[in-house]
Length: 273
Ligand code: RET
Image (cartoon, rainbow, N blue to C red; front, side, top):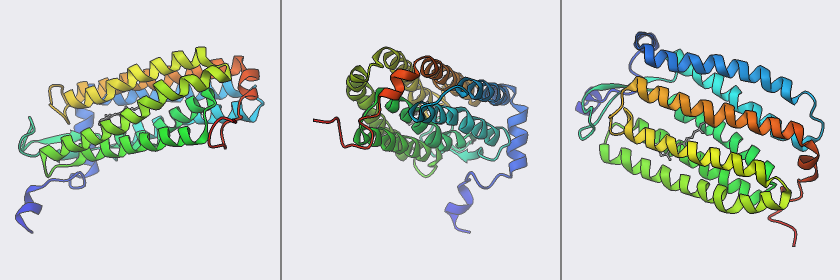
């Protein structure tokens, strides 16, 4: 073994049962995961009931995209609670916990790659935006999640952790631009601006909490413990996913007529001239 390979601990080296033991001995961390699993289960059943009456294919598409949010979430949290997507990382020199093995729930960032595009798909359909704009928001969002994952996983250099964090933030700015500048005008034209405005505000405010928490949490400046960081994400998830999705589905169920009349823009490069 080279010197580098003996000193670098990767997420793959601790066994899953060692990681599971560590998670289960940390009550704060463990409860932050199980509360979300239970909640996602209840929310899935509720959303199935709420979507029963939908008939138009557009309303059903929004419903499926919204349903996928708690479905991805329950899978994500079972992955975390079982230790499958959690590992120990040895933080590089320069990090507040340099040299220590820090528990990293990296599965969160990975599964955001699947859940956040569904949130944006549902919002984009609600705003009746065009294909180019929807594609931009979703691909920039995936870029944000993957580079966020890289920022969390890199142990070779403290500087590069923050470089990836910066790249992820740049992707995030593109998502925010679409949400704040492009889609409100589309929603106005589609007659969905009131509910879109509420959901946009909820999304923008809550999503801003994630990079702040990352920076303050155990993977960034380490001002917060692993358990507190995890509860932070769980709390944001409850609002950004379940409350968001509930408000959206309730509105779609009550306003199916408005939703089914939209749909002129998707599939085109933009609004008809
Ligand atoms: C990271 C760290 C790097 C910089 C940025 C981030 C943003 C994350 C966001 C996550 C939103 C997640 C949601 C999940 C619901 O399933 C990756 C924390 C910008 C905005 C809403």
